[in-house]
Length: 236
Image 1 (cartoon, one colour):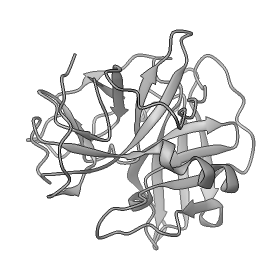
Image 2: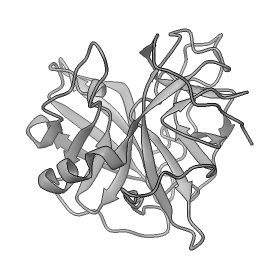
Image 3: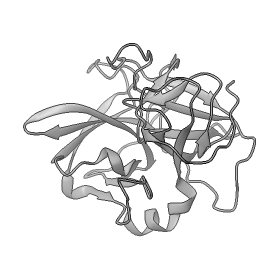
Image 4: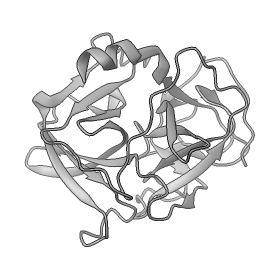
């Protein structure tokens, strides 16, 4: 378990990967998706995201550049390179179906949230499930949270791992972990709370960190999903 402290947001840089993470297993994070962006006739690694309904995925606004003309979404994946992986599905979404928060500030990383409308309903199964949206009246203090994503797992290497990574945390929004942290490739991915009934609640989206080199003991900032429930409802 990773212990964290709440800190002030005074220095930061984009955060995209999990350092010192562990490999996830099939069905462990059925709400997690992987995104590739299509720019200039080429597919490139992009970010993570989280399923909240059979037609909607959330990610970070800073993952959606003006140059993107489409996203490829990987559902039910653990090994993103294995097209024959059991439970894995892929879907391409055009730019017109991606909604960035209108008040997103790329300098301050304010309102760092985007919504992806799927062109077809995703069929839920044991590999693909939505995360629940948070209760706006609940702080989730002292809860155990998990960060997941396909970001870099070794800060000395800039190659993305093939397998989904995870890190357990005990707080959210502004975190200082004692070990492990998100980094390149993890932006937009979920910080989730596991519920007693086996479902998960999404409380944060990986946004930015205090140090662009991603040392494992530096703070990470997550977009507070409960602050955007009305916007999500109006746009999904």
